[in-house]
Length: 307
Image (cartoon, rainbow, N blue to C red; front, side, top):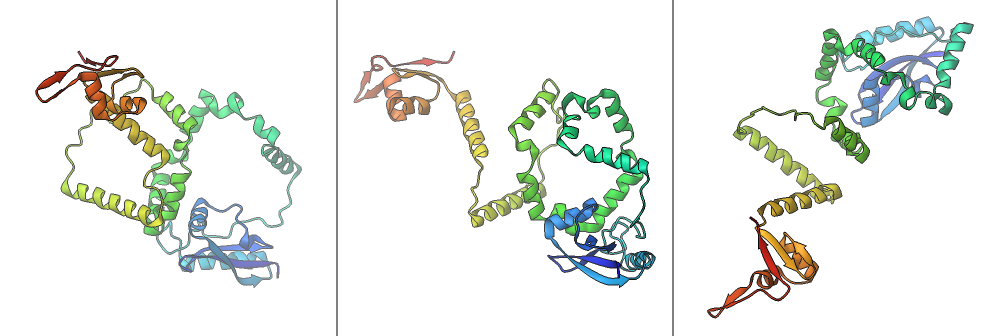
């Protein structure tokens, strides 16, 4: 029998989450799946099973429609299936016209390197202001009904939504484009000269409940890192902390320490450069008192206070 009804089962819970009609190897193919299917599979994996074979495609479509209706779609709030339609669609074995073949060939050419090169940089139509305006006006998410449908799907999936899983969140953090230096530079340049998003906002002091939630979330994150042996701070984070501490020290500096190795606003930097302790740097530059006697700064050393 050529046609069949198949199902996909989540590897983490063993629950059926997708029903489809297919032929050949369609039951195990990932091509042409909806984004919700991809989210579940990427986060949890899946297993394919063929439920029943049929003599004709019509019988397979009828079975698909029946099972989807009986089990229920998640986006409609009727069941666990993430199918985005009621089934019965498809065109197996359809004969394409010459015009369709030509159009498909042109689309396929756009996947080649030559095709991709023809759309890069300023050649990309989506970079033209007139095209960007049209795309913005035709954006389906401007429709409140479509936005509500997406929100309903998100609510229906609850904690089962891939975005709620720790694995998915970690993957998104690791692949966040905003962590790349070139992307961060572009974002910075685009915001240059613009007021901050929170200008004029006064959120007031945090409530005790809010402080408790932040504390619990921080403790949970730090505990997980300690248990896994993962560094508490990334190299970038450590560099930021050190630079922030340095800038804070510079603001609090009371002057410049002039030494044979150079001039420094921070005692720690002067000590590192000259190979002395911070206390010795102060004695050499400022002088000191001992047993009722005052000693002048060491020759070649001095301190220039801030005015």
